[in-house]
Amino acid sequence: MDAKAALAERMELFDNAYAFKHNKRVPMTANFFTWKYLDTGYNLNVALRDYDILEKVNREFHETFLFDAYSDMGGRNAIRVSDALGGYFHHVDESGEFVRADDRCLIEADEYKDYIADQVAFNWSKAFKRYVKPGLTLAELGNAMMEFMAYGQFTQKMQQIFTEEYGTLCTIPMTAIVMTPLENLFNMLRGIKGVALDIRKNRSELQEIMDYMWATQCEPALQNALSIDPTGLVAPVTTVFLAHSILSVKQFEELYWPYLKRIFDAAQAADRRVYIFSEAEMLRFAEFFEDIPKGTLLIHPEQDDIFEFRRRLPNIAIAGGMPTHLLGHASVQECIDYAKKLIDELGEGYVFSQDKMMSYRDDAKHENLLATNQFVLEYAY
Image (cartoon, rainbow, N blue to C red; front, side, top):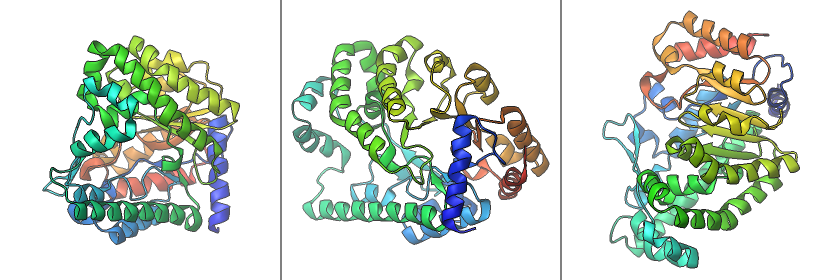
């Protein structure tokens, strides 16, 4: 089958999963990241700094395991860009076995009004200085910009390879990501600790900056996502959940849901699908998703019981569920048996995937993953 036909077939598999229609087989999406390089014997200090190695490993990963869609095609950790800026935020551990991400604060609680008054000036005068190593020279800045462009060219190249050569889909494309304001603050500007403090001590200023970020950043990103060609994408609108992990249900209702609902409403009005990748657990917020129409939303929950998720939200298509502890430590037959259980019990509206971001050497045995994927590809449930 050529790439164009494979892409059409895979898009139909995901179309059917969203709509809870019967498929000839369950589609599979890969939640694999740095495990790929460790499995092939590379040290992450080497692999993540060499675009040729990244391309080689990601090609081999697909050709071996044949997933229908990918969250990562080699661009997850922009280590060369981080290196050029002084190694802030992302670091490869000296062992070469894992990547660390620092919780850094680029904007202080008493600087929100400065950010709103002139975002560009604030970014250059304060945030940028906190992002890079002290004393960064003009030559080093120029090198960092070259690395950033090289990184962009690499990620674009990999997207083209997977779409045009392999006929696969992408679950988290940069062009389709629409973050809520709290996620932007939590993940990029204020940090985990800063946001947690602001929720309790700085609520009015927090609300003000979130409204500003929605108008100037999130809403434009949403309109862009709604306008792009969805070919090769699991969904044209993608959002990622992590900030919800520190919220109570009441806080979610006040600080998260109003913006998320705008995303859902705009996507439904434009007849566009939404994909949510949810780190941590989110089932305690199930009540907010009960009225989402079937065919609109696919959620990949990492830490929720996927069977309970289906019982609580029968209107939402779900991905995930294959336990890391089985892929990494059980027998081949135990992995296949559990994959069969997932498919048999979840059926329509289900996309087979892993329950965690596969990042560490022991997250999966090569032979377990290979046998499990071969079973899913051949199982006509």
